[in-house]
Length: 245
Image (cartoon, rainbow, N blue to C red; front, side):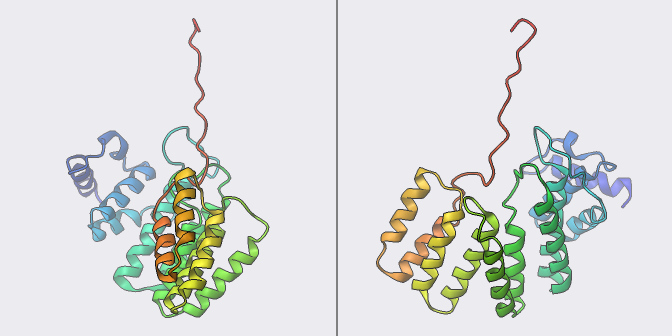
């Protein structure tokens, strides 16, 4: 990718419908800029250009100690890039092996990162792996892996994206098999590990009270689309006193 091509992408994003500040994206030598540009191009639907940019990030090793006060960490940038590359190779090339490889790399980084993950649920990479397996006709393998995750996380209670997404997948599997009563019970269990607030408690209580199994499943499914609270607590803001404070 030459400088002219790169600046063409930067210009598109800086002057698009939802402009991105040039200062955030213009430095090609900063792989985080390439991360933002590539993911933005994918979001815009230009998958070919997105892949050209994102492919330059594949071999980058993120600094796992990076924990910025604002913005995404290097680990998050890398995870999101790998996630989008996996989507591209799966949707366009139907390359199951490549998609699962990139998702595994994203999962490994997300799981290993010890600081707050602001951008998405860490368990989402595992869930996408399960759905790729399902889409590839390997439902039984996906169900087994989801069950194994639930067992592996059995002692990790409270908010837990790995257990939640595994149970969410198992609920969907039961629904696809025509058993909405079982699917609803699994969903109810899954939400024990979902970040909830008062609105979530209200919505989940309404779902539990629904007597029709199909409607109860739909109510839980709706709750799964609402991010009631962040998955992880945000770093508290530290107010620094001035010299005269």
